[in-house]
Image 1 (cartoon, rainbow over the protein chains, first blue to last red):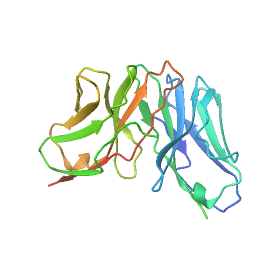
Image 2: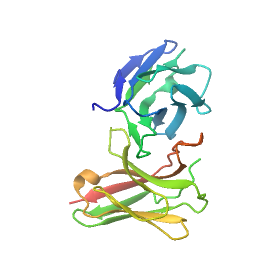
Image 3: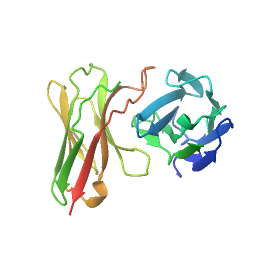
Image 4: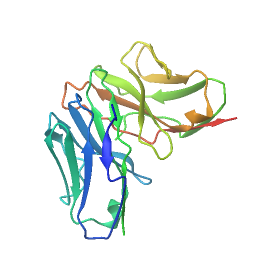
Length: 113
Length: 113
């Protein structure tokens, strides 16, 4: 099992551009989470899905952020338009398996200039 | 808002046991204690979790007090590769819609040779 796969691993973009982060979770895990991490705010939960259905998006900072999970093997987090304060590492996480653990992907480091 | 309190940092000698404390005085009956760690530039990694009994796996041991208001993560023989930020988290089972992990600031553990 390759674990959670995220792409791209690094993204540098200019303010105002649309950014799409992608995630391929681990099969068999019913939950998918998106977190972001910054030095100032630490790890923050943005949104999570259960069986492809969004359950809690209260952590999504603004309407500029949106997330989708069209099927069990793919999810996206989109920021439109992006701003410098969105610069962070974004983690996709698979969870809810039998052992109740969460498996973090390697993260996407986003830099918005 | 994290429901746990951890010391911000601690040092440990290589080869010795590292005992990481965590206070969670407001833990409710259906909440588990989870421990994760994050090595620099990587995503958080699951270590162990428990409800009220002590738990042990190949990575660590988890000791939970009888009143469940605090716990200790024990790394039996710390190595330099154990240098990381360790997060203590309380969260409920995935069967409820409240299944999400809220990361606090954690404890930065530095293992010294």
